[in-house]
Image 1 (cartoon, one colour):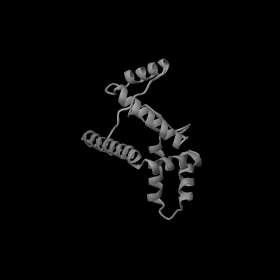
Image 2 (cartoon, helix red, strand yellow):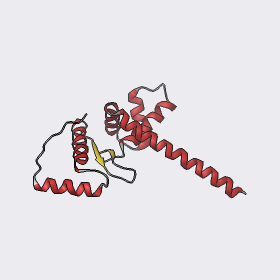
Image 3 (cartoon, rainbow, N blue to C red):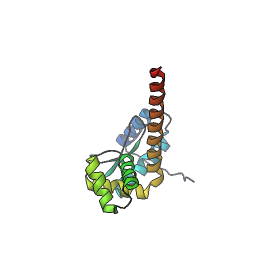
Image 4 (cartoon, rainbow, N blue to C red):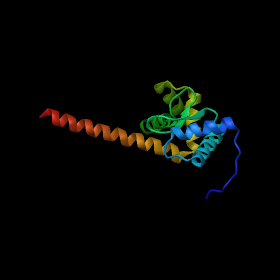
Length: 146
């Protein structure tokens, strides 16, 4: 349940908020404020995580690195392939294979621990899109084979 709050913005901040809302159709000023405050608080909890817009939508991203969900997907994959590895070994493996420094892999896992539903939804979406693209490719191959 939300509770109404009165917030006064400096004119420059209000202008930036209005600009943000105009770039995000369907998002009200109130919803945008809630979103941005939530993201700012999450970034305070997780200083290596920022939020960015992209073609697929707004998502958590590592400072100087990939999206959090991409690292988490790699961690889940590594765990599935190498179930006997320790947590530290999984982090090292993902770092080595992805080129993402270990401290950023750990930052992604820390964020995932606090916001599993958000991160898991991005991973699921990516996996669904990958499966659909592969199925489409297979259909095209069959059609082109004659």
